[in-house]
Image (cartoon, rainbow, N blue to C red; front, side):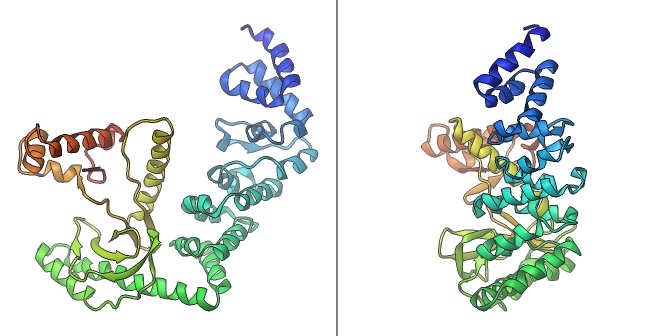
Length: 384
């Protein structure tokens, strides 16, 4: 189509259904079409208030939706923004960033959006919600955090972070709002895991020691821990801890930190725990993996991903679930065999065996789901 014909097309589509007009701009990149849609939205915002994608046309666009800078042409737009269709939480929290100028109407909109979504969905975006506190000059993000924490103890337990000042105040507000059994459970939870994660700090002087010496030190410290039955794993709040294997501690490889693995017995479903100091990077990476898993499942791709949970519990430590029945790509590379095929044969038997064929299929489906740049990393594990 010629640019000159787009004006009539856009106006006709607007008369049929304004939402169609908004979606036209996603499919076609015509400057004339975009300009006309923006004019129509500005003139009649009430007709697209239920179309969340139309919110971008009340802004001066600088790239993608999340990069828009609010540019209200008239105060009459403010009343519409406050009641606009809710975006996803991950987009809503971007409105708290400084580039949006702390506009009170946009902040009120973001506040309402976070409150409208289920707690479980907001729970998934805990890292982004917490980081938004850096720019929360007017207190709009602190309020929904406090409200959600009152509803969900698990959300309350997830907002620990070493980001001082703003987050310390937020943490104090949340903890002060707890009382009775809720406060007692909070104290038990963090008291118990402080004993567990503190072992990592005590292990640091042993980093250059033999693995057997590190193992002995971990066993000695774990033997001192009395299990507080009923607390939950930060990385797996669905299950409550009923016991800990005091002999399960294993030092993990690290040049600068002192992570270790320990096995817990929980009521449902089983899980392991690792303490480490780099958990925030893992949190973001695993959010992306979880999103891609949903995408692969929704379109019917037989690819396998296991987005285990990672939670930062305090400055310098956190907990990471361990992928069950898995071998890391790094471990395979360090095996005393010459080729990948030799590794599979030595571990699962000949190529004609069912175990070998099942492992090979699982390996292919897992590796195909990962970006090629990450396939050599010890962080990626395949499921057998």
